[in-house]
Structures are given as structure tokens and as C-alpha cells.
View 1: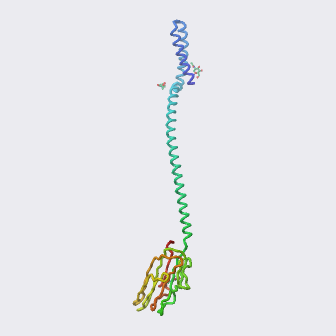
View 2: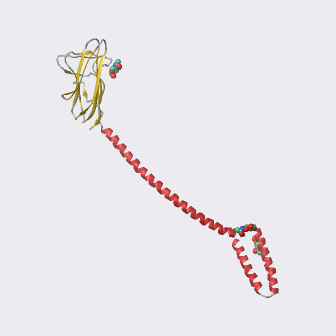
View 3: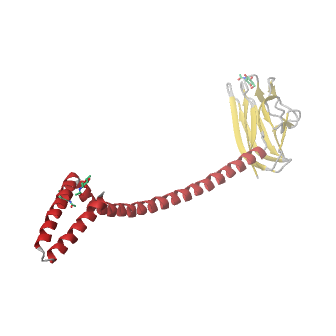
Length: 249
Ligand SMILES: *[C@@H]1O[C@H](CO)[C@@H](O)[C@H](O)[C@H]1NC(C)=O
Ligand SMILES: *[C@@H]1O[C@H](CO)[C@@H](O)[C@H](O)[C@H]1NC(C)=O
Ligand SMILES: *[C@@H]1O[C@H](CO)[C@@H](O)[C@H](O)[C@H]1NC(C)=O
């Protein structure tokens, strides 16, 4: 419709020019009349559809607009595509990081699984006072609170390191009533690591100590009651010995 209206107008203009270039008045008049009808028709059609005529002009404007929009969209699209690319790269990076973190976690898990469970906690006796004896004796802690890994032997009172590592040991000893002397050693193999003495006064007296030792696999640790000293324990767990593997070396 728009196309045909334009074509009509062009045709009319040509006829008009042609008509006026001729000197023939009659012909021109006839043409004029005809043209007026045509123009009226066009004008009618035009006024009927101003939008259409205008639309022709708008069509190009719209086309231009569309083209501009397309260019704009293209630019936007490029921008978004580059953002998507960037996001995908970030996603890949994240995936790599996650998988390496997962690997690390698995390693830590398996390390922990490999780490032997070694920890003991003991009470000395329910029998009351031990000693005095004529010689030093290895104390056998008979109350086993915990003995993970069974590295402490209650028959001998000796702890044997199942792996090379750093171990922590601590003890508390008690005496009660007046004027009883405590005297103990903590041994690493045949070497005395710690010695403690204390004397009970009117009632309870306790002494404690702790140490970290580097042990080879098979090294032993134990507590010795010196002659002629004494220590005391009963069901209240006054005298205890605790040790555990901190980490392997
Ligand atoms: C005007 O439009 C009508 C239909 O839309 C058509 O029949 C008529 O021929 C048109 N007039 C002219 C002068 O083009
Ligand atoms: C469209 O038509 C209106 C009135 O009919 C006119 O004022 C306007 O200039 C026209 N627009 C174009 C782009 O030709
Ligand atoms: C001493 O230790 C044993 C074993 O863990 C426990 O059953 C008992 O209740 C403890 N005694 C006291 C007085 O806490």
C-alpha cells in the first residue's frame, strides 16, 4: 500500500511536468482535471491513511532506527558474550580450585587415617599407699581410663611408642596425712627425664608435671617410685598418668 501510493505520486508528477511542457491547453486542461481527480483520490487516500504516507518516511526512519538498534544490540551482545566468557573462565578457575581443595581434603583424611591412635589415661591404684620399698620400682597403673592403641602395658607399667613422633606425657601424684615424702622419676628408655619430690603436710598434697618427648618407634616411657618414698591413691583417682601422640615425625 505504501509502495503503491509513492508510485502514484511519482507518476502524477511526471504527468504534470509532461503536461505543462506541452502547449496544448485542452490536453493540459483535460489532464489537469484528470490529475486533480487523481490528486484528490491520492489526497483522500492520503488523508485516509496519513500514517501510511508518513509511514513511508517513518519506514526509513524506522529502518535506520532498527539498524542503529541492531548495532547497539550487537555491541551489547559482544559485551555480554565477553562477560559470559569471563564468567566461564571464572567458573573453570573455581572448579580447579574446588577440585584441588577436595584433593587436599582427601589427603588430610588419609593422613588422619594413617595417623595411629595413641592415647592413654590411667589411675594408679585403689589400694591406698604404695611404698616405701627398698629399691626403685616401676609403677604399674592398674586403673585404665583409656588406652587407645594399647601402647601402655598394664602388666609392666611401660608405654611403648608404636611410631616415631612427638608425644606428650603428664602425671599427678598425691600423698595424704602428715609427713609422707613422695619421690618419683619419669623415664625415657633408661634416661631420667623428670624427678619430683613433695611432702604431705596436715592433709592432701599433690605434685604434677608434664613434658613433650621425641620418641623413636619402640622407645619406652614409664614412671618409677624411688626408694624409700611413697605415693597414695584410692577410688578418688588422686594419682594419674596420661600420655598421647601429638604427631608423627
Ligand atoms: C484510494 O484507495 C481505494 C481503496 O483503498 C482505491 O480503491 C482507490 O482507487 C484509491 N484512489 C486512488 C486515487 O488511488
Ligand atoms: C506526517 O503528517 C503530518 C500531518 O499529516 C505532518 O505534520 C508531518 O510532518 C508528517 N511527517 C513526516 C515525517 O512527513
Ligand atoms: C575414678 O575413675 C574411675 C574410672 O574412670 C571412675 O569410674 C570413678 O568414678 C573415678 N572416681 C572418682 C571419685 O571420680
